[in-house]
Length: 397
Image (tube, rainbow, N blue to C red; front, side):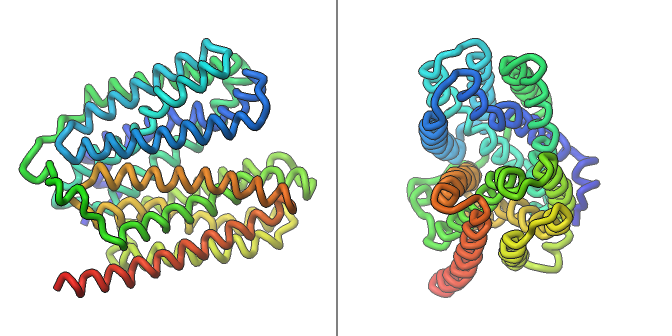
């Protein structure tokens, strides 16, 4: 059984580095995008929603299509490079144009293609680890996912710092440079996956997706929805409604990010003793407990003390979700990697919208109850997945 250190000592480290670079590119653009639209382009806040929804939907469609191409034998390495080059073009345009129309057009074209970068990066890693007999796939996927989390610890503070020092162009150009570094790293260090008879799928395989798989998609959706509903409302609730220090939300987010990485790097050891489904169910139980208790928190120490539960949830949820999905359709890694990413993106959009609606009619305080409900739905969907999967297995026998 491979440990995290053994994976990083072997060729697996290149996929973790690629994951970190890919995550860092996104961390330079996504956190500042709403700020850029309002402050840099002087548009009304409603246009943030127009941009976000249209780019997200376009990206989900393109990402799923490219994932299907990867399953049919098209090089995931080339698809990744196409996506990361599209990201670099979009960032270059963002750094020079000051018209919402042009930014929106760049978003629904180049950023839509760029949305496939993370799924194709995950596909590249899974194709490689699938040929390694001594590596725990769950541990490898968790390490790759942890690298993205590490990038998001450093990326947003750097992005906002660059905006403060050099304007929005500084952050976008930094992302542009990292995107080129990622493309160069793939060309230099990531080998082309050897195509075999098992790498392309038939039309029958391409259309066969079990009902239980869609329930698993609901699990990822609700988990992401609850997480973003809580995190997006946290700054406004703690600072605006409770009058707590402005540094508290950042401290909470940094703490949970560091703790969740510790959970992710130990996922492989946990899967030796417990099934991934049981571990994820425990994660959702921690989420339900966390959101329920955070509703009553009013002091800084209470918010900080509860972050451990949040870290356990997200570490297990993000660290195991991809592995569970890929295990359901082992011949369709491109499809499952894209579906995994898209389910989480759709959940993020739903969570952001849900937090806004709740705040509109009550307050940001009650967003944690929305997260509680989403986590409960996620746990119910996971139980439904396990039961339906057993039934499908019995029918197959």
